[in-house]
Image (cartoon, rainbow, N blue to C red; front, side):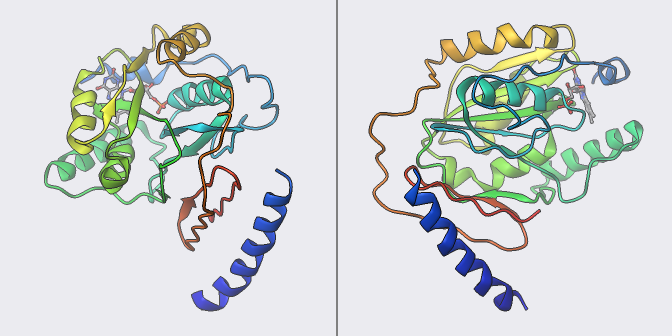
Amino acid sequence: MKKLFLIPMMLLATLMLTAACSEDDPTLDEQEQTTPEENDEGEGNEGNNEEGGNVEGGNGRYLVLYCSRTGNTERMAQTIQATLDCDMIVVEPETPYEDDYNAMLDRAQAELDAIEQGNYPAITTSVESFDEYDIVFIGYPIWYSHIATPMQAFLHNHADLLAGKHIALFASSGSSGISTSERDAATLVPDAMFEESLLLTSGTLGNMETRIPQWLESLGTSREKPDTPNATSLNVNLIVGKQTAARDRECNVRFEKQ
Ligand SMILES: Cc1cc2nc3c(=O)[nH]c(=O)nc-3n(C[C@H](O)[C@H](O)[C@H](O)COP(=O)(O)O)c2cc1C
């Protein structure tokens, strides 16, 4: 059945490639009430990422990966994406987040306990390659001082691919600091090079529109496209049954199945 599905998908892939190339411990109750400001999208991204999720930007140098249950981290991700005009991918758990807050707390604690035993929760997001990205931005909510479990699973699954890459962490929390989660990231992806991180709390999320551009500037990022694309081959990655992302610098191709 899957093979039958793959044949038309590969034909479609060929057509799409041709077209693409020819154009160019918390005090949790309080934190749940955080109401972040609406995201103000940057130039050139109108209608692109209003609802978050996956976005293909024009600047091939940066990738924003994030998970978010109530939208705070998502708005940070959207602001980074809009500022840099870069790619963005949401990391999602296979089992959707609980709507009930207390149930979510119980689940998060159970998943964190399982991670300590080496058992990571299933996620529906995978990325084939980070090769063309200068910086990979990794965003997550702080859960019990740690990286939220879906992003821990993503980092665990992609540790080899992220080795040697520049990673910039960003996080949102009610009030907790980011240092425990920075240690999580360093443990999960020991061979990455970590840039300065950014944390916004319920008290500072409202300053997102100024804090994020300042942070991006301090990292030396730019929304300009690189002058000379260095990709010499065309990579197509096709995975059916999972949300997957692949990209080439000259010919951008992405197949996704939700
Ligand atoms: C399971 C769970 C655990 C949390 N643990 C913490 C914590 O330890 N410290 C803290 O300041 N906030 C904590 N929070 C609050 C979130 O970090 C905060 O609301 C964050 O902005 C949510 O981001 P999101 O909207 O992207 O999901 C927790 C929230 C949840 C659901």
